[in-house]
Image (cartoon, rainbow, N blue to C red):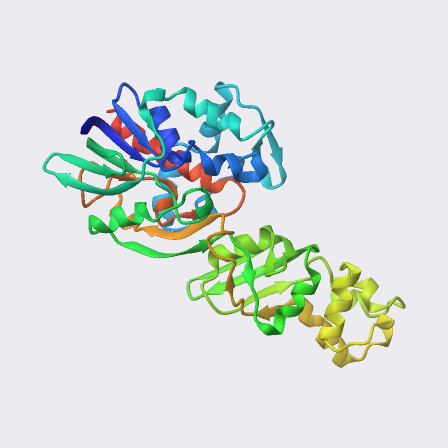
Length: 384
């Protein structure tokens, strides 16, 4: 049996829910393979959901800067805050201008659901394929076929497979001859090479660092916390670094607030003057083959070794993978998407939103902002 609708939305995450909430007088179907909507919203930010950031700029994203700017400016962080605020969402601000739910991420999902007719939501349905037949699409699923004038792919990326993430969005894009840029785990921890296995002995310790990632066309400096972990390193600064890292070395300044010259006359043991947790300082001294003695007794060669902590370069072995990643890097090429509507430049009536696109934001609410912004642009076009 085939059900006819105006718009079939594939994915009931942040972008799909916002789109459905913004559509006016449309016969829609919102399809998701999960048992509930907004699965990723519900678990993000430790269940508090970081919905946006007080300062949102295109350079907070990896992707085509002009494309990103044209979309963000139409529904920026102020619009997001006002839209949810008008519907009673209470928020708190944390460091780096991050806006979190005061109570629970469920508040965000409940607000979005309230704007959508319940009969329009179809859960625990797996989309198999999408085909275009003259002036309509056929969305083939595990529970029959939906016939739609328009199809919106809002299915997210590959991160968090435990909450139902699949490749369906990319599969649909490829089936319509869209370019899908190389996919990889983003906002994720790094595994390390044998030379850095000693990091694992420091598991659970966090400290502020500055990480520099440099590629052929980009140099990014990231300030924030690094967390030593059982698999390697994680923490906010590392997660942001993973967004820009392709391969090769990164450089970590483990002493970002410290001048080495200011330590040289101290009579305290060097482990106590570095401003690092004691275990970290002693472990690094051991790796550098330096005796923990009064700073003013270190030789010039030993000081040169200490200076390595200001620019400690190494090549990560890889990442923790999609199971630990916040987002997916890569996706549907934005060169093939109209920024004024989110519609495919190749197939009329086919739209792509949010994470499935080749745009990825830094940690701090930028990815949900992107989801909401793309949904707004798409809704404005479909509501015409």
